[in-house]
Length: 124
Image (cartoon, rainbow, N blue to C red):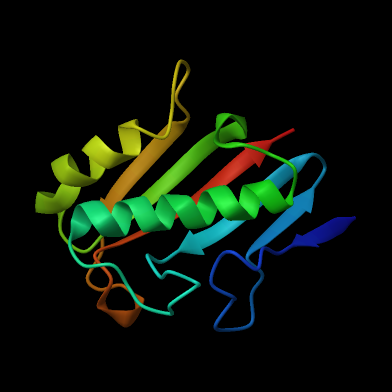
């Protein structure tokens, strides 16, 4: 059985997908672009974009009754690997202690010309 998770504090899905799905105690959060739901605008610069993507993840997890500490795996998609160090600096501020497993990959392009998109899996 799966349950749709949705937060009004994060941008809504712009296609045929859900912000997150919970199944068997695991919450799978779709890739979050750095769009501020309140303004509909995308932050500028990799640090601001990484922060906004992670805030969107945080809001969606909150709708599921979870926190960032529940994340077991993240995937970070970057427009260019030269952005990794700056993204990583912001990313590190969202986790304490046992950080989640992570993959970071450069992709040819991201939706809306974003510099970063972050998805995750969390466990209850």
